[in-house]
Length: 317
Length: 317
Image (tube, rainbow over all chains, first blue to last red; front, side, top):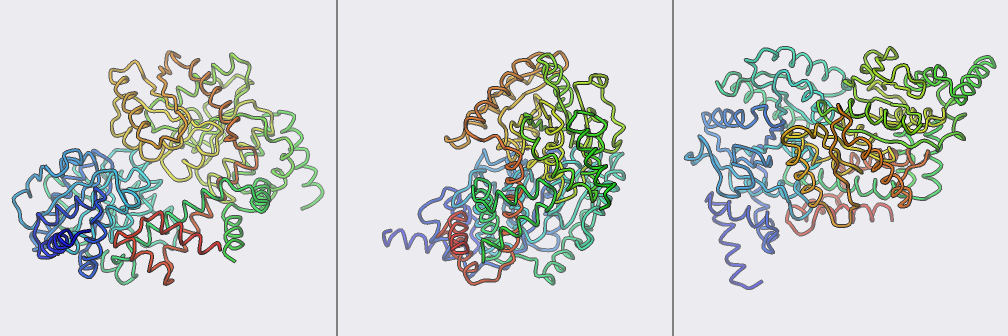
């Protein structure tokens, strides 16, 4: 890299850390596009990372997630917090969708200097969407934003990962979506720090809350308690309470050291990738130890988890 | 265990392998409830396992999956194949849902000796829902059923696993469900051997097919081709073709040795569990090697996947 390019990068990073929106926007574009100067930018901001609170909002399309995020932003602005939003949901009306790239429709917060909204295109570099998103969070964090909001649909592997790298994950659903609740139950419920039933002015809201509480009770007893709240994002009902509960959960997570610092954000992703790689190796393994384990599990002599534990112990010995 | 109990188990297994439906039903109940004689039953049937073709049907509620399975059963019966169905979907109208247990509504095939339908309750023993389901498949296989159909919603981790232990996975969707397609894209598309757009008489069917084909093209070039078919399950349109394509895919999978034998069915589950366990270990690791990797990934010097590969190699050395 030429000295001129180095100087340009240093200047970009300086302007980003000074809080200039255009510099942040350009840096994100470099990360997203996998530009050759991405590592230099990321390296240079590391010392400034670690102050933002990162909140993930996950929910199926149609639950009013974007309207709720807008209402939450309004509440945070009342408290003088600056808010940066990374919208990973390609259908998000908040950002106008990743398809529009930088030309985002910012809605009601478009003219507010304390709000920065950016959509993340669904094709990530440097190890996938999750890694790109984690790096964008770092950029927003280093740029001095108090709160970073990540918006995802929560449908796929990467999106569950993204929700997990947030300090607090809020899972949003809507009343009467029985099928939706069914789907949420399986994967997304596991990652929720807070559950919100939005559109709570609709008839089946109570029933949906009860279903969610019942599902939570089915989980292991050693899990932390997950509050179930109701909101009406369009009127703002319940939003102040939601912001308070998010703050409480954040404090509890800090005490339990479940808040991921700038480095731990990537630890989860690396651990996940290593797990997947081991799984692929083992799924195609032709070793006798694996064959014997399969035979024992198929005969019901051993559980799948015990077999996996034995294999792992033997490998790591 | 007393000799009497041993004799009873031997007799149950004998009657199961003779094709008696009541014996199969009772054996499944023992496996599902985690009865102490489950390992004896599973051990005794191993030599008879390995002849059935196992087809998974996965799709969100509302896509007409159960109607389609009924139509596929009709088609298989025309070809003189006997069919056992394990319905893991708790909302399945085919089985009447796991909530009703054995008292299943068998619909049109209720009086057909060549069809056996059973719902699997969503709480599995011996290592989870997936392991229980794999063991139930083994029982149905040993009992001499030509084809075993597994019905799942495909929402959660276990359900994706279950689809993956099938020899052939058919993913069903319906026209115009943009959100549905979105959700399918993420996780389920990866496991499909065949994609079906059901309710193809509805207006947006063509568009949904095109979306699916476009999504498939986004995948890595080294992937096998996945046929996209249309059906109208209520009239039977396209079902004969679907059954033919399933048969072709089965043959191709046999050639590519992607068909999982009775032992390999469990290999996938064990590999999966080992991957998850390693992931949990690494996600909470405080070792310096992990910390250094995180720092390098956060600085954009290394991809998440490369970092994971290095860690794994170092561990397994």
